[in-house]
Amino acid sequence: VDYYVRGCPAQPSEVIELIKKIAAGLKWIVSEKRFSYVERGGRVIEDELMKFDQLKCFVCGRCVEICSKIGAKVLNYVNRGIETLVSTPYGEPFRKSGCVYCGLCAAYCPAGAITYSLDVDKVLTEIRRGHVFEAYVEPEVIASLSEAEGLDPLKVICGLKAIGFKRVTVYDPLADIDLRTEGVIVARSLAEKKILQALAPGVKAIEPKLNVPPGVVYITQCLSWKRVLPKVLTAREAQIALKKLNYDTLTDEYPDYVVLRQSEVTKVDPLAVHAGFRNEKSLPVFEVCPGGCLMGGGQPLSSNKKRFSAILQERATKLSDVRRMFKVC
Image (cartoon, rainbow, N blue to C red; front, side, top):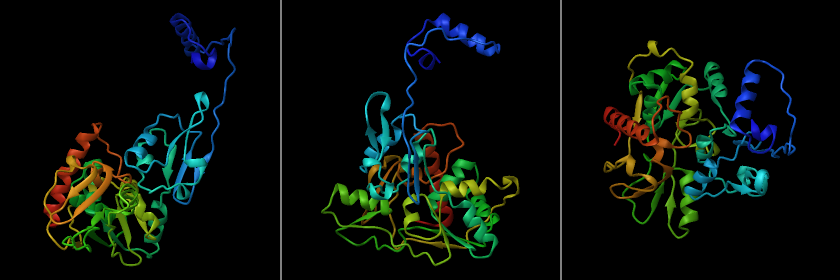
């Protein structure tokens, strides 16, 4: 209050008296205003997928920190003093700024200044019209939705069918990669591949080749697949669709199909995954998101008021249940 009223610190008694007058609905007059109010500038930076409204941003720096942490370094500070803003290089749209579309900036933004396009209504409309009837969903998505909404994994499957999908396939994006291949590193998604190529240009990186049939909706934890496949929902968007349901009516239901990996992998504690390599049995897999895919940029918001590590631990437990339940290695 004092900053906008006078522009400099006031005595506590003055602030208390002013608050009392405002609470009582009394008129109050500021007799002294040392500095004029300076309106911070800003504009909307957007492309077909990402949108950043600088006018909503209060420059907390969380997006800058996470963008730098994963190695993308697209978002940073510009200007100085009260005119400081967060921006892409030269205010360019995300697609021209080197953005990998991991979605972490949107997930970490507390003000809702950074968002990505939501296709929930579009997909639900296509379901009602009969244009879409099957969903491929990643195991990590089922685990995170189970944790976020307090549902059993089988009820998550039932929920996906309740919103209109006639068939649900649990699909591991690494299913079509031969993990026995030597001399390469598997990037978990396109976002990871771009980061890996920037960090280690000499390393041969391959990304999953998604074998998703035309007309099938792919439900994923990674926003970057929206730039590749025509019909993609993030886990966050799936959460929005599920919230339209009455959870009390959901029953246990198994998926229609499960697409497995070609070779076995060793179990790895997801808590040990932190923007780095996860060692599979024969081939390292690169995950850029802190906490791995369970805490990806497209993952749902947790209803639990817990710390990051506690949410990750619960999702890791759910993922173990999903893998055991659906026999996904």
